[in-house]
Image (cartoon, rainbow, N blue to C red; front, side, top):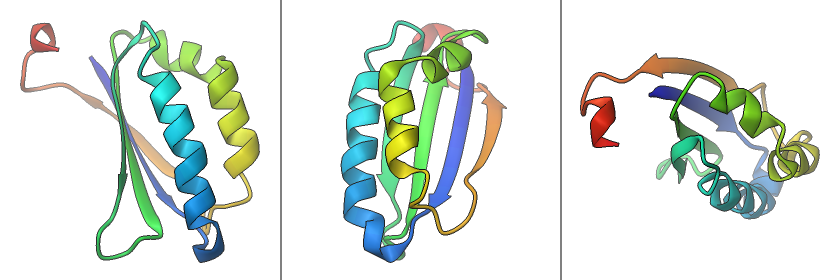
Length: 101
């Protein structure tokens, strides 16, 4: 599995719109064949901070995800909403084993 964790900080005036747009993206992303899991979370003590936890089945899946209509619509809708650039990092799965996904 290839795990991508994205951290985003959103301008206060865009929090609700960001949640709406990102929920649509997450719902559609979760149906992609190369996606094992796609979670969207909001920090409890700072509602301007969000995390996307994306688990891909192979190394090609993240690039395929970026080609989808829902991802590109999301980028267009939210690109101006960020307080600062998103951070992202890929992780290797340790536990549970890939077969458990």
